[in-house]
Length: 224
Length: 179
Image 1 (tube, helix red, strand yellow):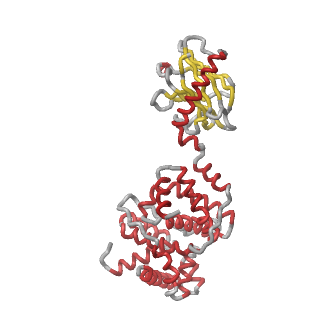
Image 2 (cartoon, chains in turn green, red; image 1 turned 90 degrees about the horizontal axis):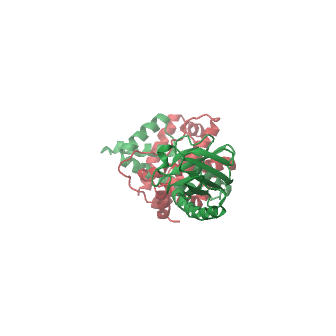
């Protein structure tokens, strides 16, 4: 802050002009550059903003239409609220999957050909259900989708999550209800105790190599 | 909802807390929508701008502290600036003329002292100490987004005269508000 009172007055007036939006773009840019450096100038602007906010005191409040909030949240959080608690939700999925595996084994309809493992990749609400059977002899993972599908123009991508590692893509599921994928040799040792998850992705799969959309279903891989 | 509670909600939004965002929307959207409607006088545009406002709130909550604005003033300023921005674009026939500057976005630095809102009620009283035409010019700049050019035409004075008037008025106003 300058000790010169006239400079201080100049700052006061200019901060007020800035708060009102009266400065020319170049002046405003110069003022903003000074703001970054000068806490006194920031405090001056903050008091003006506070003073001028009183212009809105008498403006009646009007409730916006109810659909606006939902539209806003959809725009800001496109992958729905599930995404924010993805890990917790996967853990919930594991519990559901352990129950499902029991049912699957009892049914006996879907099991690996050789020594292997199974998983029930399930949505918490049952909207998606994919049974997985893993054949450890050749690394083949056979998937049978009995509920759920990709949204129009979207794809389902399968992920292997081994312990605390980041999800590794096992590929995009085809539209067929039965799909076979080959687990890369390097990942086969990690299958036991891992989690399989399916996420909603752009057509063709995640552009980033990591899940970008909501996790739609998950399940633990357990010995068959 | 007190200023302290709103301050806490903004701080939580800065960490990505969506529930805090929903709560802030619930308790402040009517106030901010009222401002958008008052400035724009068009429901459809006001709805669009209100969404822009809350997107800005979500995206800039991390920078809220650095500006040193009190919480409602921060929200009101975002809403007012976004609405004025839209109004000026409408006036300029959709060209980006003299856009209202975005909210202050200072780099990390010493936090400005938070401002108490105690002096807000003084605004009306202090505006009354100004020449009525000059008080009206300040009000029009804030609520109608009128520029120096527009104010000069309205009050039939040269632009430089308008600028001098308004700066002097701001100093006088500040002196009164600081008492």
